[in-house]
Length: 254
Image 1 (spheres, rainbow, N blue to C red):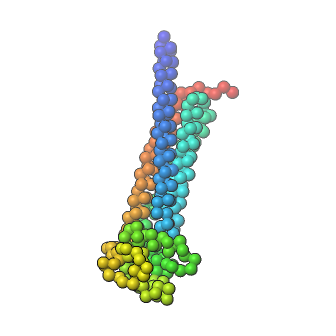
Image 2: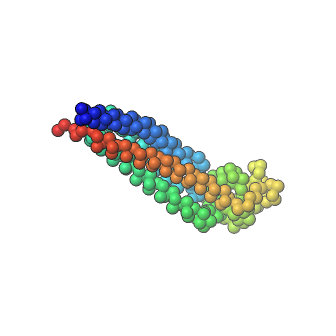
Image 3: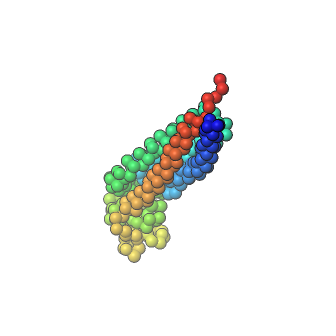
């Protein structure tokens, strides 16, 4: 009698673990879609700014998230199959995939954290040089477009302030036609509006474009970190449930 009761109790626990894994896999699939969406959003939303950065760490973090998100969604389907088939081999494969994704997200999180720590120094060292030396130069159309969009989107002018443009290769060249700032600095863009650097005509923001771009990138990195941590917590729960179910399922027949 006691053995029969114990078998029923074990079956009940196994059924509960199966349902918990089903629920987890649904949440895991949703989390994977969220991770992929954040990665794509990071690359698409104002992606022009990536050309203004000295390193590719920010873009690499986003690509890793997209890859991890796609792998998460596939793994969620694999997890459902493993639970339905109740085979240890499937559960082992599922656990291995969870561990792999966890390590990938850990790498992305570390990259985002390290880049977040040195983001301000990188922008201060490189943004002014990039803007003054490469703006409107041959073969630098991508940077030129990025600078114009940066100044218009964030309503700023120059890396630190509008006077930075007096050191620009473009402003010193005949092509500038006596402009003191690019036309993208103007509050209302019209041909040759950059001839006048009065506050009524151009954007003069405290801290310049560096402050605006730094805040924008920092916000994106925080979102990447938050989503990564949330999905990683789901994965830890999933790995625990998988181990418990693995121990309760009998060995596959040879």
